[in-house]
Amino acid sequence: CNGIDVAMTEETLFVDGHRLQQQIDELSSFSDTPPPSVTRILFTGNDVAARRYVKGAMKEVGLLVREDAIGNIFGRWEGSIPGIPGVASGSHTDAIPYAGKYDGVVGVLGAIAAVRALKRIGFQPKRSIEVIMFTSEEPTRFGFGCLGSRMMANSTNIVEILKESFDAENVSFAEAAKEAGYLDVVMDHSGIPIGIVTAIAAPASLKVGFKGDGGHAGAVLMPVRNDAGLAGAELALSVEKNVLASGSTDTVGTTGVFKIHPGAVNSIPRESHLEIDIRDIDEKRRDKVVDEIKRSAHEIAGRRRVTLTTFEIVNQDPPAQSGDQVVGAAIEAAELLGLEYQTMISRAYHDSLFMARIAPMGMIFIPCYKGYSHRPDEFASLEDMIKGVQVLSLTLKRLSSL
Ligand code: HGY
Ligand code: MN
Ligand code: MN
Figure 1 (cartoon, helix red, strand yellow):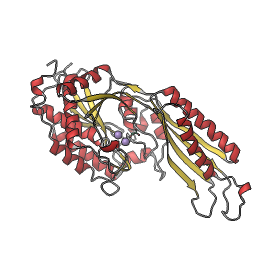
Figure 2 (tube, rainbow, N blue to C red):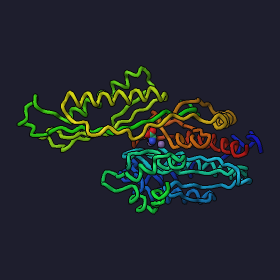
Figure 3 (cartoon, rainbow, N blue to C red):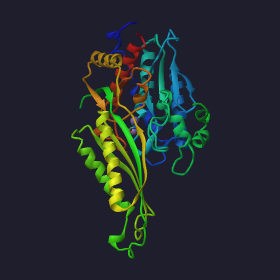
């Protein structure tokens, strides 16, 4: 079958929304924080439970499940010509602290729902279709996002980085992976219902540390202080200033982590630690902001007589373009279904940023209540999710038939 048979679309393509919503709700119960928030950090008990749940959901629709060393989970629907390149769709189920239940989850369970819908109409793909759950799209535990997709895309330095990675409790990546049943193999080897993503913005993240002398909040007079907390505060403001100075609203910057030590009301901060996220669709402009933040960090340290102990660029990734054929198939699917759509740029990053390095990539977006994400009140309506799954089904149908 070389096209999308209209007769098979709107009337007969049934997406089981009840089951999809039920699965989203059940998966949200695997959380380290109470509902409606969801916190599911890589390789914790709840992450492992969620993984088990996803594997069960894949099996329920007849997918053949396998996992790789870093914990990416694949559910395969074998095509009639199994040897040729397949088509994959997926996302993540890890969640940052106090997030909601939809981010990533809709991409995984929605892809499973699309397979269910296609099987129901008796479709047989020529190319195999894979549903993928990527390991740790969020950077929460080890400071690095998109671990699974970076690994799949043969990112050159990720294995070396993970060998040196420890979480806040000083647990190494290898220990955490092993604890979760994954392996050190990793270490041994090297208003519109549908958005169709044409490009993903370029993310970067930084870690910065300042150190001063600290001291007694009463005894040390203002002129002789070198307050590491204030150096950090100034840097956070300079992030905002430098981002705004780029002249484009596409440049965004966030100081999402700001810690001071020792953290007592009557103690001048001796150390500060900041983690900064900078993104843009224009890589050069993003890099210029990163350079300016570095310059500011040195300038602040000099002026405040503190030491800049750390200025680490954790990641500085290029943007990615979607594949024309994938975008074309998604547009065709939306049109066949009579759904209004818009092409758009994703300012959030996703595993697809890295998948684009090894295969043509595309993404289908659905509306979120007020655009909220990374918040407990993140919400997508079942109606919108069903529309997204319908578009995904027909896109997979098209691409797997080419
Ligand atoms: O940070 C991001 O863009 C994504 O949520 N991981
Ligand atoms: Mn996220
Ligand atoms: Mn996500």
